[in-house]
Image (tube, rainbow, N blue to C red; front, side):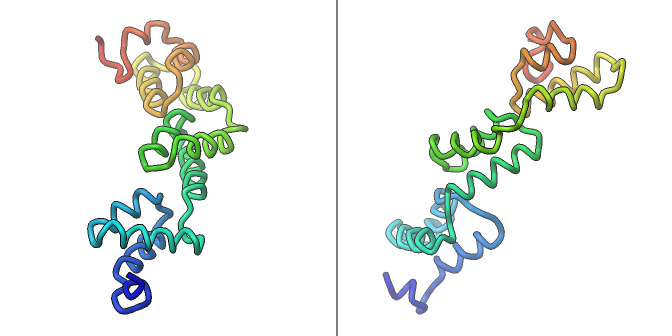
Length: 162
């Protein structure tokens, strides 16, 4: 096992470092990559080495991805779901989202979208904006109120009649 890490065949370590060079990865994402090329024990050893050398950190990855989600205009619940889906623990994901979104005001984000529509947007434009906001994870009641779509409940999240 140590021979694989020491240089005789560093394939797993090289693959992991190359993946981390491209972008931060969660431990779970790296593990899935490494398991395609080696055993579970070999993958665990490489992952532990990366963590000990501070090359891989789920906390750092969670914070980075939470910031990216905020930049994309995602609401906190959608960011949290994406982090957990990527293999971040619920507690660590929640902590990252709470820290990044602490100063973020969902109402302000919705109002920015409303302002981009102009003074008297057509109903179709308001529905399109509503669908975009709902996909980003904003609360349906907040979106409906901001866009003046009291009948949004009957439209469903995709805007299709139910």
